[in-house]
Image (cartoon, rainbow, N blue to C red):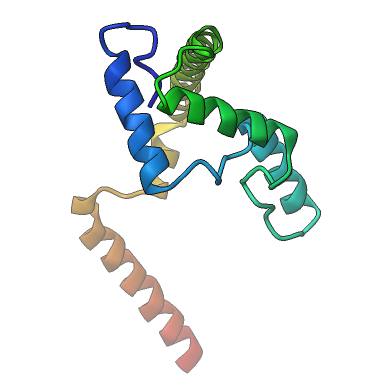
Length: 151
């Protein structure tokens, strides 16, 4: 929503989006930072507890500062421009790092798949045209087993 804050010509549009968000849903339900969300989710899962609330609690000092800042920005004030620019830059950097990490993970997964022996991968997942042969072999084994039971 504030990604355009670093472009002065697009800042009025960002302020309008912020006003719409304030008017439609308000600024009361502020999510916790991503690292805290993840840590709490992992901890609660590991301990078998219910998932914690993803929102900052009422009365939380950080929540109050964020609401004040968003309200001021939605009113068109520029007092937090420096901070917003820092946050936008940090988010873009995190996004770029995440993209690189995901690309690396994808390459590693594909390399692992390529290392599987061909015969094993075919046994694990026969081609569609091979299903009649697989089915015939299964029927033959069932018939042999059935004959053995009758004898």
